[in-house]
Amino acid sequence: MTEEEVLAEFRACHALLEGHFKLSSGRHSAHYLQCARVLMNAERAGRLARALVQKIPRELRTQIDKVVSPAMGGLIIGHEMGRTLEVDAMFVERPSGTFEFRRGFALKEGEKVLMCEDVVTTGLSGREAIEAINAAGGEVIAACALVDRSAGEVDMGVPFFPLVEINFPTYAPGEMPEELAALPVEKPGSRKA
Image (tube, rainbow, N blue to C red):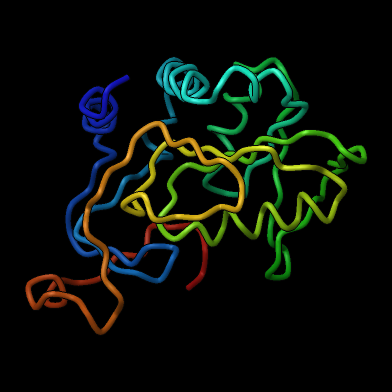
């Protein structure tokens, strides 16, 4: 899928929002990609997952034993990636502030894991998920995301494969343009900042 085809999927379901958004990373943006909306249709989610799998080199794809995603944002795309790769998908969550496996999810020592996110801005959630996966005995061999909005600057510590790079500007709280700062702030993400 091209970048324009991916954006068309977001536009078709009103998942590309404009306004003033405080992202899970703590940064601010005039654009927000609501992946939950783009993934609410199972056919669309499957199409996006199949396209994302194709971004991962074959030699890595064939090694993946499990897909693990950070909750909440990565749940649906992680599940669809597991389906596409024909491996189990599970997630880590933050019941007390740090990612951990719950609900009976566990990894065998040395299992090869693909960490899957919806949107990456700074990579913090992904890196924290990778730490939890490694601590649980897994070996993260690659990371992926539907959208990389880091302008290609994110470092996940493993090979990283986004479906598309979308470089809407983001701003630290003290760096926002006046016109953005003047708008009311929405906080649609899943992490408390």
